[in-house]
Amino acid sequence: MIHAEKLRADFPILFQEVNDEALVYLDNAATTQKPKQVLAALTNYYEKDNANVHRGVHTLAERATHEYEAAREKVRRFIHANETAEVLFTRGTTTSLNWVARSFGEFIHEGDEIVLSYMEHHSNIIPWQQLAKQKGATLKYIELTPEGLLDMVDAKEKITAKTKILAIAHVSNVLGVKNPVKDLAELVHEKGGVIVVDGAQAAPHMPINVQELDCDFYAFSGHKMCGPTGIGVLYGKRTWLEQMEPVEFGGEMIDFVELYDSTWKELPWKFEAGTPNIAGAIALGHAIDYLETIGLAEIHRYEEEIVAYVLPKLQAIKGLTIYGPQEPEKRTGVIAFNLENLHPHDVATALDMEGVAVRAGHHCAQPLLNYLQVPATARASFYFYNTKQDADRLVEAILATKEFFQHGTI
Image (cartoon, rainbow, N blue to C red; front, side, top):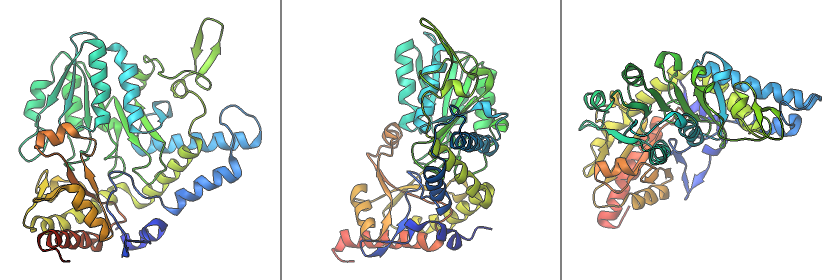
């Protein structure tokens, strides 16, 4: 069982005032806060082990290399990959998805089809747009049901023998819905294509088993799961990674360099050119340790409990529109909403005056918001260190905002 009040003690940033109010941080879909254990790992590396990896035989280099590769093993275990050769360190989800588009994209030809959904983040749209333009391929989008779920009937129609890539979010960063990745993988594999999963909003919140999902590629970011910024992961099945060419070249990823040709190292280092984000990878490993101590299944259960608690309270606010499914059991801890006659930026600013931090804008999902026929939304997103008191503060702040803009007083 999760005791959020106790876990909050690990996050110093949460204990501050914003605009003379105690901070309630509800922008976790954008980035999560970092526990003391992760901050200590960053400091420890730079104070005691700072050296480049794989290249030196001195003690600091060997310690840094050991910790860096130990972090890769932690990631492998975290997502249940078959081997560490299938775990590539990147700068984040965006980089991971771009690597797949640029490298696996070499197998795409004119007339091939790339299938996305309307709920994708820009990072899982633009790389495929560019690839389609370069190769003369066709982009297709899976429709959504009226309540905001992926329309699996339409998915079966859109995924054809011409489909070479299905790129899909595991969890939507706006609608908060979880997509049936395993079923989609089966659909696209039956047609001879591959599935690329944007796991940025899933990996921090629920157990991930890439072998059970049978995804060909899975991408996620460290900063959304209590790790530092600038570090991410791309999982790929060995069979594909061996066939793919690197997208960055230089030191570290080479085997032999001659005047007119070069050869690459074996997996996973073949893709990791230059000095990597060593401290970031090590700290990500410690973030994984921290999350596994709590338990990903417990985190998922707790967030379901928070959503079941707060969603009815939000639904009871007259003039508040919530996007996505209205049943708590169909949602994750992401809740996008609008308050009648108010721009979401004004709502977010007013909530900030109450000490409540939420996101406002298009959330890097403009095609989805166009689909929903709204220019922007406010978005509250919960994590395991948020409490029911935080949820109440959100509701109270929205009510105070509504009162202020209607009558000019709080």
